[in-house]
Image (cartoon, rainbow, N blue to C red; front, side, top):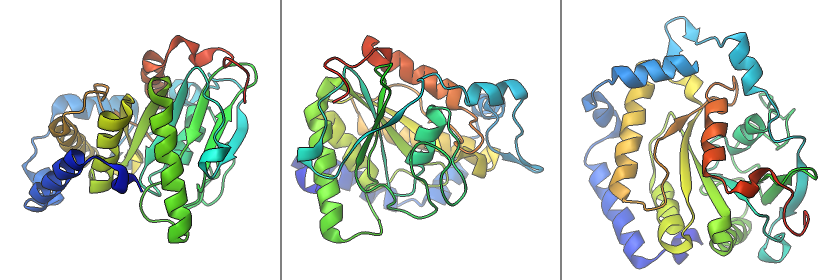
Length: 287
């Protein structure tokens, strides 16, 4: 579905990149990557990473800021499993994308000031400890403000039939391409993993075919030792630079949806990239 619609040039570039990456394991690349003191200081300032004593504890002020509901009270507007069910475009939309089980729904909850539980959800978007929970394009918004966030199905493994997965992927691609400049995509990458072929293909499709600006965030950053997280950050930045994406916004972000560390900084980065209508009532209503 996404792969089938990616241009031949994009596919060739992604394949070439994947082959070159196979010559050097991720662990070997991490070992060779210099440790940046500046990145380590940033990680510690955000309250991310794991030290010898465990996860870093946030200050009371950091906790309050992380749980602030800056987008107002939001609810589910529509769940679209196919192209016919897509709602009309709002003035500004933010779509969360990434591989299955990367933490998109948990991050969505954290962005709007909600908390997600370990095996279920106390937040806005459903969360479970298995891939493929999100099986439609779920549009969340507020009747008072124009902010709209879209939780998209993960690409890759999911507990669903091949037919259902193909349907989600087709709807996701059509949604991204049709929205164009009204959309911003937040690509989520698990901090414990590297950029995979599916991530590269999706990024190239966004850039070459849809022309949609993209931000990249590393999720689950509370689960990775600080020094390893700093090296993984550097490796991810290098991989993104080699793709030559025109619409990629500068700077890789780091967060923990569980503790909300890094979430306020990510909110501010998103606000800088969104059109002015981000906090206004959507033109033409919520439909």
